[in-house]
Image (cartoon, rainbow, N blue to C red; front, top):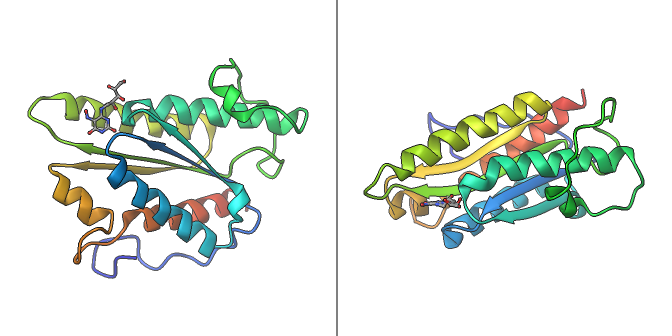
Length: 192
Ligand SMILES: O=Nc1c(NC[C@H](O)[C@H](O)[C@H](O)CO)[nH]c(=O)[nH]c1=O
């Protein structure tokens, strides 16, 4: 974790033993996204989250993150309150709404979600449109559904900035680790 003035400071010690966490990541810029996902996964497991309770799903690009987060969370709510079997991933195509009263501790639901993507600015306004819309979309999902959605969208001006934040340079560190810590903390606090 970053030890300078920036960063979230010392993570609160949270027990992730009973947490279920969803990681949704874009496949654009995969060589940069992959270390971020692994960094988040590593920290989640350090916080006690079982590997079997870390569910990972990919989407083409960052633009698709909000809808995937919403549909996968909705599907998990339906699954948690109905028969234990069922295809969570089919939830992406199934029209479903959150089932009132499904507790966060019931099997199948998620206590926190991490949305991960890397947006690299090009020479058009495309970057700004995606960054703004995805940020607003993820915030809306988290507030509408009452589930912590950790903001793992790197919006960088060039690849070098992304490499640094993915921990791929000598002077960088992996921001995915902070996102894993944040997910464990927010997921645990959701159960308090
Ligand atoms: O353009 N650059 C990027 C990008 N574009 C694709 C977009 O997210 C979406 O998948 C398509 O527009 C189809 O809807 N997606 C990223 O994650 N990073 C980028 O840097």
